[in-house]
Amino acid sequence: MLNVHAIDTRGVEDRWGCTECRCNLYNVTVDEFGGPLPPGYRGGLDCCYDHTQCKLRQGFKGAKRSLYLRYTVKWVDWDIHILPLKIYILDFTDNWKRISNSTGLDVEHDCRIEYDVEPCSVNGDVDGKCVDSKKLSLIMPNGGYVIYGVAHQHAGGIISTLYREDGQVICSSNALYGDGEEVGNEAGYVVGMSTCYPKPGSIKIANGETLILEANYSSTQFHTGVMSLFYLLVADQAEAL
Image (tube, rainbow, N blue to C red; front, side, top):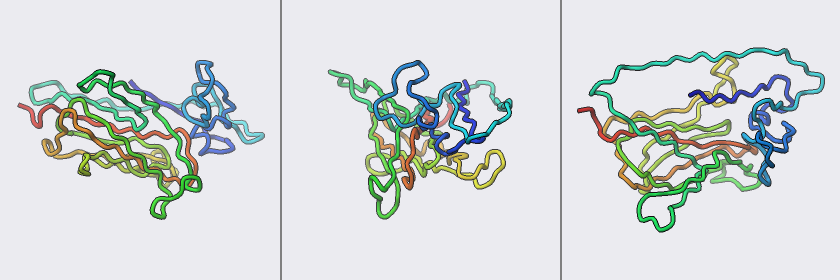
């Protein structure tokens, strides 16, 4: 499955506001299903769904154009040396809670996917720096050996880190920014995230272990609809039999 969200910023009044889906720039008052927007909702996915248009500069008329997506699929034939993996997507906005009367790890999840970052002129700075730093404590229902980790952040993102309660870092993923004009290196945009490939068997998460997810964004300016996701691939055993 490919999930693609493309925003045309040609000729718009506020490029950054458009990419952050500011509701006032899209002139949107209801979501894609016709329902009212949440109270105080200023921007995000609910304001830039299919067929919405960000506000253009007066007099601008852009030509219609077609876009194409090129991708490569690779695979290997299954054999005994291939280990099955569990895929976890950790969401900083998950207001999870343990199910009532449960003594196990059964939980209900309420992932809101996105959130806003207030400027440091509102919330103040951290050690003299304009950084919005948030932490989430979560329980891993099933552990295993960490094979791969990477975060997902939007423009303004700095770093996202997953670590144990004692402070031991499992994976840190830094936002990588472009500095040019060519495709894949656009200045000011997040063009990638650093990844973690720990040595097989070196990092193990215990069943039911509590982990901390920390997400840092620059708060020199206001941001809407940002995300802080963390993708984790975990294997039950360190090496194939």
